[in-house]
Length: 103
Image (cartoon, rainbow, N blue to C red; front, side, top):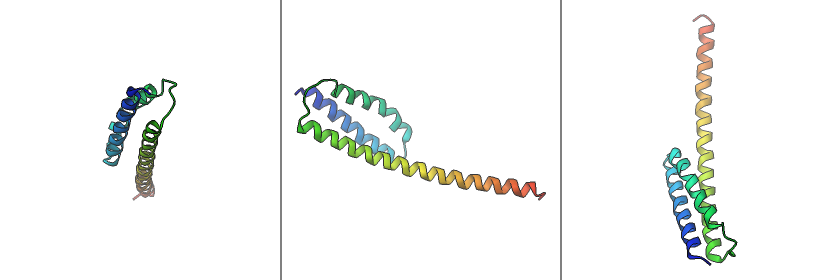
């Protein structure tokens, strides 16, 4: 088992935690900016055919748990934005209807 795989996974886990913190803070641009680097770390970690041991499995589970949290948060934000857009569009339609009625 190569020590570098552990280091790569530790770095990816640290980056995943940072992405969750940023997502929780609403900084989705920063989350998106970090994703390619994290993907590169994970691809490097699994470029080898070395067997997966418990340390590797534990890191992967932790990263997946963080991803679930990040995904849930992004869906929550998306739904909030959709509601806000819906309210804005309804207001715009009401205003247009009011003006079309000659007021």
